[in-house]
Amino acid sequence: MSGHSKFANIKHRKAKNDAQKGKIFTKLGREIAVAVKSGGSDPNLNNRLKDIIAKAKSNNMPNDTISRSIKKAEGDAEGLNYEYINYEGYGPNGIAVVVETLTDNKNRTAANVRAAFSKGGGNMGTLGCVSFMFEEKGEIFIDKEDNDLDEDDLMMLALEAGADDFSSEFEGYVITTSKEAFSDVYKSLEDNNIKIANGQVAMIPTTYAQISPENIKGFTKMLDLLENDDDVQNVYHNCNNFDE
Image (cartoon, rainbow, N blue to C red; front, side, top):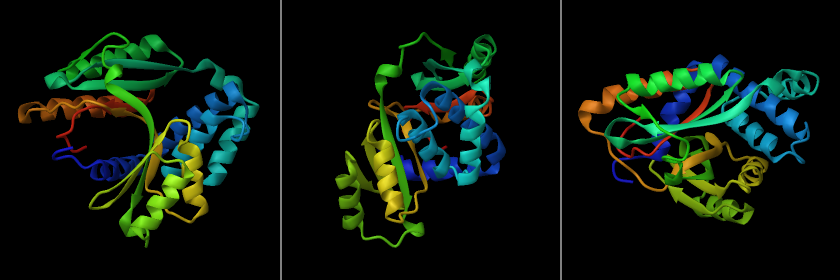
């Protein structure tokens, strides 16, 4: 992608997340609770929970905090009140945007998401209007500074564990997996003492668009409003000339 570094963006996004770790942990805890309620507390039998645990670890959520969240969910019915709802729409210049939410009040969430699109110069669309431009895949990011690794050895380890693709950027490595193989590849890397900078199942664009300089401020505002909303879990877009 011209002018676009996945690894640079993921590092910047991770730095933002570290600055508001409490809010991130609250959102992750909610995801864990819903996963436990829907599929049980054993990650070996609950793929959704397994994926969320990997995501939580990559956001530096301590293991004991993860364990407490799972145990709390086993005896707490609160998670039953939440549901996943995706919203789709367009940012400035027709940028495709998918917003994943976990909410106990869909009217509140829909109003907040719609307002964020509007304030950023975009508009919320109907379900399915842009999601066909994305594929759900696993992505794992490994920082070269944090690991003394031979690139070929790491690539072979990832591919043998079930990864679909491996690429090297200036700052790190990007490993792409199917949704189904993500948690197994993540665990295999962990078991081999690989330090992972970030990893999760995400909506990966299959087509890209570019934003004009005069619309960057509005698009940034839209993303900030969405990402700071308590109900929003993830925001995905297909802009490839925008550094987050």
